[in-house]
Image (cartoon, rainbow, N blue to C red; front, side, top):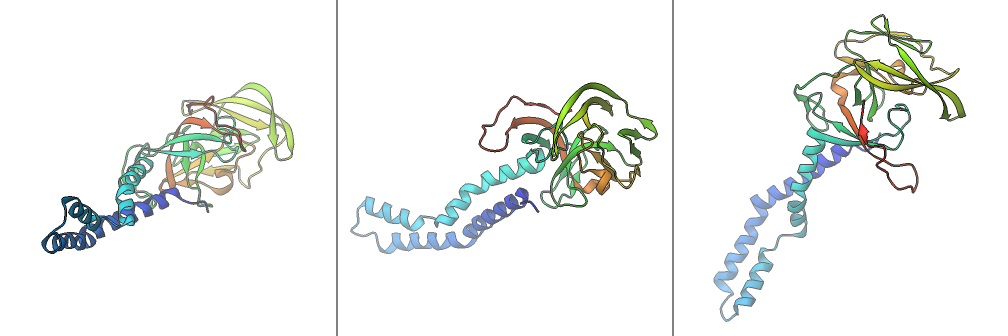
Length: 279
């Protein structure tokens, strides 16, 4: 399982906050008492500079408390931003090509589908529901890590995918031919086709590998209540709801809204040439 940065942030905020609280309630009293005793018994015959220096030394916070107080507000702000507003996310695979490329850094709107508590994901405020055609980040039912796909099916929908054709509630989703392309795969470069598709009023590109197709055990699915059917735009190279099923509402992370940076693997410098809103 990947490291959950939200869990790390929550732990650090709790640790720093607890140290600050313990210092305020318990430890600080010993420093105040030490200063009071020094002032009443040990200042005679000493210069103002000596007294001030001694008081500063007795009042000094332990380095751990000092760091906890310094980092707590910063960590808390970062936690609030990531948990309730916007979270950065890097595209790890090619399942959303050509919409999103490996190495794209995107922003995820965390409140688009409701305000959720960090780490546990419990929704505390309803905002909106996912719409067909939107690009969503979520945790799939088979693996405890973030995935990103396009919302194809809403609760109650019947989805059919067969012979590279997509049907939603019995109606075929039209694909307009754009161009023939070459697609890099783990078995070399293969011929492919780029299409333009409209789902839920959202126009987006999809690509297919000529002569190759995923062969799921099923071709038709009915989306249960409170679940969503997700597919990648790289239709023949995407591990998605065709393989592992639908995504429950409780496992939604947020809506992908923009690409803000791209970084190729290796030592190549990041670029901003792909900055765009995500359709």
